[in-house]
Length: 121
Image (cartoon, rainbow, N blue to C red; front, side, top):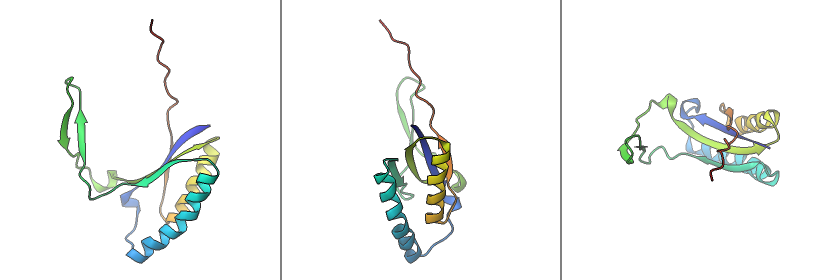
Protein backbone atom coordinates (compact mmCIF):
# COMPACT_ATOMS: atom_id res chain seq x y z
CA UNK A 1 0.00 0.00 0.00
CA UNK A 2 1.09 3.60 -0.60
CA UNK A 3 0.19 6.75 1.29
CA UNK A 4 -1.03 9.84 -0.55
CA UNK A 5 -1.91 13.36 0.51
CA UNK A 6 -5.10 14.73 -1.03
CA UNK A 7 -5.23 18.46 -0.27
CA UNK A 8 -6.61 21.81 -1.34
CA UNK A 9 -5.51 25.41 -1.03
CA UNK A 10 -7.99 27.94 0.32
CA UNK A 11 -7.74 30.03 -2.85
CA UNK A 12 -9.37 27.16 -4.76
CA UNK A 13 -12.51 27.38 -2.61
CA UNK A 14 -15.13 29.79 -3.93
CA UNK A 15 -17.16 31.89 -1.51
CA UNK A 16 -20.04 29.94 0.04
CA UNK A 17 -22.89 30.78 2.34
CA UNK A 18 -23.07 28.98 5.67
CA UNK A 19 -25.94 26.88 4.29
CA UNK A 20 -23.89 25.90 1.22
CA UNK A 21 -21.01 24.82 3.47
CA UNK A 22 -23.40 22.78 5.64
CA UNK A 23 -24.64 21.06 2.47
CA UNK A 24 -21.05 20.29 1.44
CA UNK A 25 -20.52 18.77 4.89
CA UNK A 26 -23.63 16.61 4.51
CA UNK A 27 -22.33 15.44 1.13
CA UNK A 28 -18.87 14.65 2.47
CA UNK A 29 -19.91 12.69 5.58
CA UNK A 30 -21.03 9.55 3.69
CA UNK A 31 -17.89 9.66 1.52
CA UNK A 32 -15.65 9.88 4.60
CA UNK A 33 -17.59 6.99 6.16
CA UNK A 34 -17.08 4.98 2.96
CA UNK A 35 -13.35 5.73 3.00
CA UNK A 36 -13.13 4.58 6.63
CA UNK A 37 -15.08 1.41 5.86
CA UNK A 38 -12.78 0.68 2.90
CA UNK A 39 -9.80 1.04 5.25
CA UNK A 40 -8.09 3.72 3.12
CA UNK A 41 -8.57 6.83 5.26
CA UNK A 42 -5.75 7.53 7.69
CA UNK A 43 -6.74 11.09 8.60
CA UNK A 44 -8.71 14.02 7.26
CA UNK A 45 -9.24 17.55 8.47
CA UNK A 46 -9.40 21.22 7.69
CA UNK A 47 -7.07 23.81 9.11
CA UNK A 48 -8.35 26.60 11.36
CA UNK A 49 -7.67 29.82 9.44
CA UNK A 50 -8.24 31.90 12.59
CA UNK A 51 -5.76 30.00 14.79
CA UNK A 52 -2.27 31.38 15.40
CA UNK A 53 0.50 30.05 13.18
CA UNK A 54 4.10 29.72 14.27
CA UNK A 55 7.36 28.39 12.90
CA UNK A 56 10.22 26.67 14.66
CA UNK A 57 13.83 26.79 13.51
CA UNK A 58 16.46 24.66 15.22
CA UNK A 59 19.30 25.34 12.77
CA UNK A 60 21.22 27.07 15.57
CA UNK A 61 20.92 23.95 17.72
CA UNK A 62 18.18 25.43 19.90
CA UNK A 63 14.53 25.62 18.81
CA UNK A 64 13.47 29.23 18.16
CA UNK A 65 9.74 29.83 17.79
CA UNK A 66 8.39 32.80 15.83
CA UNK A 67 4.97 33.96 14.72
CA UNK A 68 4.19 33.18 11.11
CA UNK A 69 5.12 32.58 8.43
CA UNK A 70 2.54 34.90 6.99
CA UNK A 71 2.01 33.35 3.61
CA UNK A 72 -0.09 34.63 0.79
CA UNK A 73 -3.56 33.09 0.56
CA UNK A 74 -2.56 31.11 -2.52
CA UNK A 75 0.01 29.28 -0.41
CA UNK A 76 -2.38 28.47 2.45
CA UNK A 77 -3.27 24.84 2.91
CA UNK A 78 -6.99 24.68 3.63
CA UNK A 79 -7.60 21.01 4.36
CA UNK A 80 -6.42 17.53 3.54
CA UNK A 81 -6.87 13.79 3.74
CA UNK A 82 -4.16 11.15 4.06
CA UNK A 83 -5.06 7.86 2.42
CA UNK A 84 -3.34 4.48 2.25
CA UNK A 85 -4.25 2.92 -1.10
CA UNK A 86 -2.92 0.31 -3.49
CA UNK A 87 -1.63 2.72 -6.13
CA UNK A 88 -1.86 6.13 -7.77
CA UNK A 89 -4.95 5.13 -9.71
CA UNK A 90 -6.87 4.48 -6.49
CA UNK A 91 -5.57 7.74 -4.95
CA UNK A 92 -6.83 9.60 -8.01
CA UNK A 93 -10.22 7.91 -7.76
CA UNK A 94 -10.70 8.97 -4.12
CA UNK A 95 -9.42 12.49 -4.87
CA UNK A 96 -11.91 12.76 -7.72
CA UNK A 97 -14.76 11.78 -5.44
CA UNK A 98 -13.62 14.30 -2.82
CA UNK A 99 -13.39 17.03 -5.50
CA UNK A 100 -16.94 16.26 -6.65
CA UNK A 101 -18.30 16.24 -3.09
CA UNK A 102 -16.51 19.50 -2.14
CA UNK A 103 -16.98 21.25 -5.45
CA UNK A 104 -13.38 22.49 -5.62
CA UNK A 105 -10.06 21.09 -6.89
CA UNK A 106 -7.87 18.69 -4.97
CA UNK A 107 -4.16 18.00 -5.30
CA UNK A 108 -2.74 14.47 -5.00
CA UNK A 109 0.81 13.82 -3.83
CA UNK A 110 2.49 10.58 -2.80
CA UNK A 111 4.47 10.47 0.40
CA UNK A 112 8.10 9.45 0.12
CA UNK A 113 8.90 5.89 0.98
CA UNK A 114 10.42 6.08 4.46
CA UNK A 115 14.20 6.09 4.28
CA UNK A 116 15.85 3.25 6.13
CA UNK A 117 18.70 4.48 8.28
CA UNK A 118 21.72 2.20 8.60
CA UNK A 119 21.86 0.10 11.72
CA UNK A 120 24.38 1.27 14.30
CA UNK A 121 26.31 -0.98 16.65
